[in-house]
Image (cartoon, rainbow over the protein chains, first blue to last red):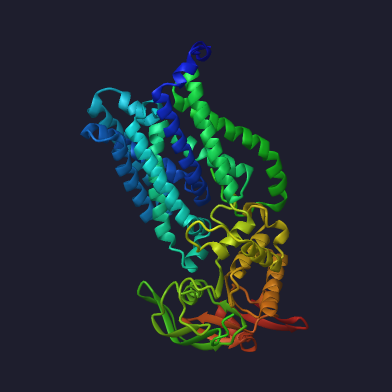
Length: 292
Length: 256
């Protein structure tokens, strides 16, 4: 097997390199951010919006390279624009399949155009599509830290009203909760997380890090605090184990990170399936909106 | 409980949505603690009336008071159960989490719930016979059980009136009867008013004190005896209705 043949005997030395330290810090920040936002993504049923924003970020990243701006700035501008559009138009509008799919296809087309014009090489495009955690620079860590701080502070402030508006918008509206404003705010926070996560696992694999660990946590428990904890631990372990494996076998970290997250999701699904069938089978899960 | 003023007081109220008058000439008063059905054909403005009472839309003209005050969004005096009550994602929340949101869902900042909060949630769950399944996810509950949880959520902030939009829709007969009995029971034990939008008066006839009926662009209120008239019901449903008096109460049938 070529994967095994790629085994690096000196992997422990590589792990101690400076770029690995940056990768671990950036990956951990993104994992924790994903655990936090992923909870609300699932409660709100916004998995598709997450997928869409990641794709809208692609031309932002390659466009930034084209005009000589930082990739983070390009990603932020495009994902924020997309987030505000979805937030203002409403989730239902964003789920008009054909219109949204067309916009996403066009965004991807723009992304490849900007990428080609910018470098005439496939590197930038590959990095944005699949992530490049090992290339995270120290100044990016500062930006990630600032984004994480904003995310934590804002979520701490709006946690309950956001949960109310997400789970039960009609009653929340009647109770005076600013449902629409919170929806837009949520999309802005999601844009921040996606801007970071694209640089770790790329637009194509982002779903597996931002949404999958939270979905795994929901299979285990529905206690809000426990879901946040389990989701964050699963995404942290995915990043850490993925990074170590990538060094051991000298293969892209994105592949291993997503593989660990997917493996955890599959195993949890298998282990909890029997119990859940026993419970919901008799109760007849009426009106259950599917998560995936 | 506020105790101030009647449950509802409307004087010459009309509502319009997008420039179109939905109904007008609503003048009536409903006493505290009443149990009133809101009934009318599809599109007659039943949900619009609820939105008006909840302070979500303004009246186009006239004066309107709920519990002695102009309705405003966010009143803790009104417990609201919307139509087709299902959590956005029933997989994601346990019944008790939803009820807790009725109590703590408006609190900003990181403030953990207190033992007193949790005790109130438990009380509300017990009051609707939902305590034993309160640790289950909403998606694991039947329609009738979900409806009970929704009522517990409306009840947990100790409102003076419960407002329910079609709580009997999508329920089988046994569950309809149980929810009606629960509402009558809550009204008596907590001395609260109940306003309930329904398609069919029959399941509620034995417990109602009156009904608001929306007909031909007007809103009227009548005590329950006046509502159960063949002439009015025939008009309301647009098909011939007969009222049958039985030992258990009045019953009306269509088409006879």
